[in-house]
Each structure stands twice: as C-alpha cells, then as structure tokens.
Length: 140
Image (cartoon, rainbow, N blue to C red; front, side, top):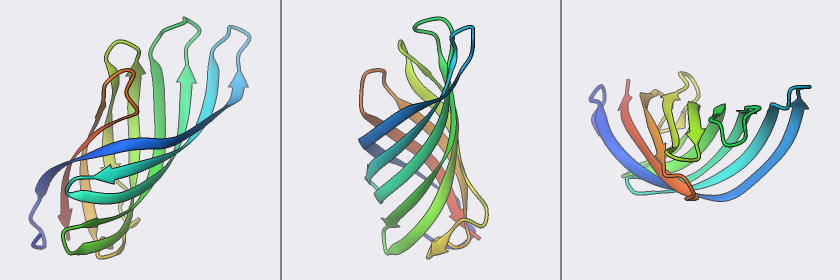
C-alpha cells in the first residue's frame, strides 16, 4: 500500500471469546452491560482484536441493543505489521444482526500502522459468531 492512497478491504472476524456482565440496571428493566471480546481476523487484515463494548439492552425483550466500544487490533496487512484501535458504534437486532460504523482512532497506531487512518462498517448476521469489517484505510 502506498502512502496517502486509500484502499478498500473486507476482512472477516470470528468471535472466539465473549464475556458479558451487567453494569447497571434501571427500575424499568433496561440494562447497561459490558462485554470483553476477542476476535480472530482473517483476509487482507490478519490478526487478533481485543474489544471492550458498552451495550444498552432495552426494556422490551427482543428490542435493539445499542453498542459502542474500542478494539485494539494487532495484525498484519501484506508486508505491514503493527497495531491500531478501532472505535465501534452500532446496533444489534435479533432479526438483522449487528451493523455499525468503524473508525480508526487517530494516534492509536504502532509499528507500520503508526500513521493509519480509516473508517468503515461492521456487518454481522443474527445468530452468527462473526462477520465482516469493511474498511477503507490509508497511511498518511
């Protein structure tokens, strides 16, 4: 990848660990939970992601769950190696799965990814333990 050129890629992730705990519960029954997650990445971006989510479960059973979090990705991409942090913001539906935005946190990169910038989407089908990161990345 040449500097300053944005490159689109799609890498799959498989969730290998998910530990969730209740942080707060309202009198009405909604819950704020925290999840610690490990993802295995394959495709153009290969490596591991360690993700911390905050999830808001609604009062209504089966309602959409809103999530936000940060994932430290330690990976290789072609000849490049290093780490960076992705910010996640999205919604999980029991019908349509998880959909959300991904943003590389500026200043979070190390190694070959020290100047990495980018954004994209998270897509995962309901009932599956994985999905796809669709990213557009560039080195400054």
